[in-house]
Amino acid sequence: MKNLIGIIAADPNSINSEIIAKVWKKKAEFKNLNIFIIGNYILIKKQLEKIKVNLNLKKISKIQKQNFKKKLLIYDVPLKFNRLFNISAKAKSDYVINSFKIAIKLMKKKKILGLINCPINKIEIFGNKFFGTTEFLAKKEGVLGREVMLLYNKQLSVSPITTHIKLKKVSRNISKKKIVDKLITINKFFLKKLKMKPKIGILGLNPHNDEFRKNSEERKFIIPAIKQLRKKRISVEGPLSPDAAFLDFKKKGFNVLVGMYHDQVLSPFKLLFKFDAINITLGIPYIRISPDHGTGKNLIKKNLANPKSLMECIKFFNNKNVKT
View 1 (cartoon, one colour):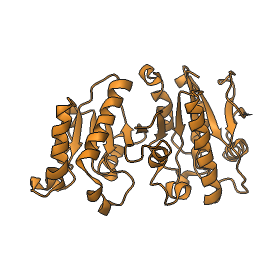
View 2 (cartoon, helix red, strand yellow):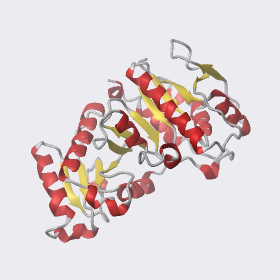
View 3 (cartoon, one colour):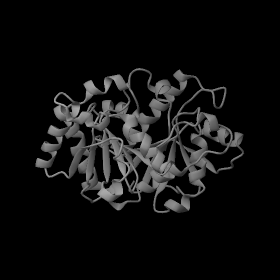
View 4 (cartoon, one colour):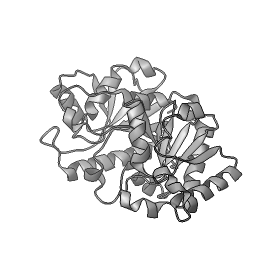
């Protein structure tokens, strides 16, 4: 359906039911879109009761033309549980993966415009098979290694060349080809979905770019990648010094900063934008977004969770170009 978004409730040991309820209560902010939840109806109902939140819920088993505004519809996914916020890793892993399979099937049948998944504990859901949701979806679509993680805010987006790997493995997982391929994907996304040509800054790997020594990653991989990207008329600058790149991104007009590893760009990005950001997976044949935060275990049952990032995920689909 043209304006229908599926939201995967995802990790049950979390604040997810709470933030879903909070965005639903502000549905006037996304009145041009319809949402429904993919998750266990009884679990969500009881979790909301536990935090004394009243919502008008309805269980469904298929997507059809119906009123998506009157009640929050729950596409029911089986889950056996005894304790509301303490479900075993095996049970919740099966539950979350099954939820993703349902969502992907609906996407491919064009029943929904896009999918959002609420936060998960990656280790408990995927174990050692995948580093995270980005890689899990890429594997399912046969594009593992070509996927891109993009943290998006209207002022600035960031993307790491390597994602959920140990720091000691970063250097050996960087190559000219990987940098080129991922920046081409980012550039295409901005051109097609956001209708703008992005100015991209690439950070070096080492402090002060290792002074561009002969055998540095900057000389071996990053500079050659930049030269090739410029030949493709992609607007790119670098290698930028990692310790200064975020200080004047506005002045230099950067739309995207690309780093070599996860925390190199995500840490300063979150410091700047907090909950006002979303995580988009590029390189797969549909749009998948998630809030830019974790499961919030320290906030469970306290009714203090901030729903802003989930709200921003939904609002992103209001962009008319995203719908095409």
